[in-house]
Length: 142
Image (cartoon, rainbow, N blue to C red; front, side, top):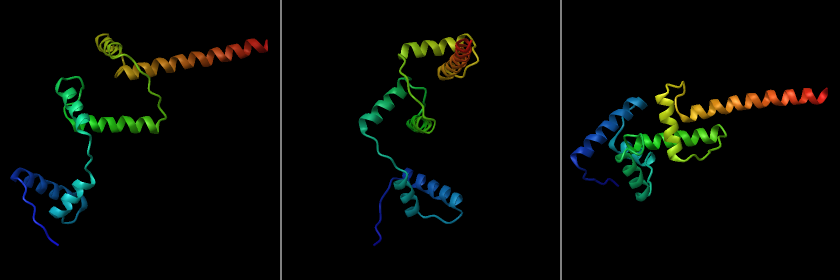
């Protein structure tokens, strides 16, 4: 059964772009039906209150992202990194984190961000700890 759907001109133009992009990507002719199927397969629905909170935070410059999409891509990347690298999250007060970020920037320290700083400091601590354990073992043998 074939049905017709009426869409606004702007949406029709966007669908045409998507059909073209999918045609190039798949190296075979795509239809509007293919474009709609693609959109349905790649569409994620978020609760309105979550979307509203993200949009409000972006608008008020509380987040460093310029769009919901950019925020969600980063959130997905961070979550995958968390699961793939067996990462443990720690909580730091926003004020402390932001002040540390500013200090790193203002002092021109060689860290990309606060996380990078924390990771390097932790690595140094663990190196010192490993050396301490070796010295302790040697002292116990003596």
